[in-house]
View 1: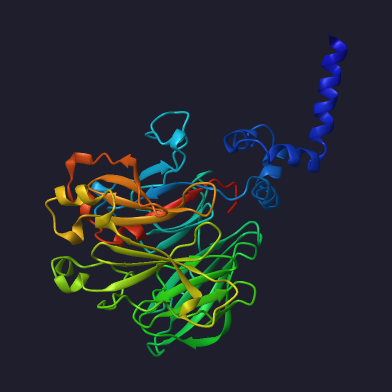
View 2 (view 1 turned 45 degrees about the vertical axis):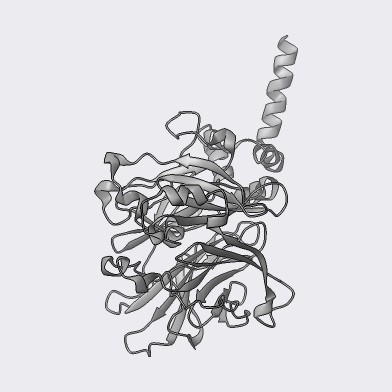
Length: 418
């Protein structure tokens, strides 16, 4: 017995002194176990905290978007409730159970601006932070501008992809005090250097570009302008903005342009205006390893396109995958039973992978319930029923049409250090 104990002890010591072997073992463990190992010794803490370890684990485990965080009421902190649910049906339970990890934000005054492969960009008043919801680590970001020279216009986008580059980067698109409205400049923050650096020269853009909602996908950050039908991208390798993307698909017959997104959502005066909903818009939606495009109006029609990666020559590079009239799905009865204007009956939240192949589903928020619509056959299934604090009805309808998209954020497990 003593011989076996000594053998086990010596084997454990051999493994512990061999970083490569120890890393190979740890990257295959469940995330919560790996986090627990950080408390065992300073050496394990140092090993697991190294960006290389996070990259190795992502290589083995992959980046899996395991859930969605809904932050629907961002205007009134006293009514604000973050809702989180897992895509996995077995884990889709209220997160009050101790065994199920539920990501949170630091406080009620921290607002999520963007999520990217496990990290989040937060804003708290005028400050911005990088936040890891898995570990709870938070890091304040320095301002890219001197205190005496604040930009009149600045928008930020987060890029984090441990399979493609170490650390994370932020892209700041800004317009100086004396710049023309269509002239912008770019600065990049790197977590490795901890500093902002200007890149390339200024560039001109259509005035409708939505720099507030950048989307990272395969070494680039993308923005679109719905009225101009323009897509711009920031090339992470060359560190410059490029205008080499195909134009957005033509609008359906009879549709008008709709400028969605931007720094401010629909004002209260616009919510009651028919003009606010008389339009058509697009949103970039990476899923299943492809760049997708969701086209919508404030009625019931939704189209989903997929980008041909080998041909950017024209708007035909966007291939129509699905064309859905929500009233012709199993949701028809639900809509008919709601005594509300059409524009308030639902909100599109997200486009997710559904199944083993490249099948996709739209997540919809309908009267306090999250419902998944399978695009391959237009069938639905219930995902989650929201519990509304104080029966506050405005929580249901705060973001009609597609506005809820900008308050839904993917969650992926990550051990990335900030």
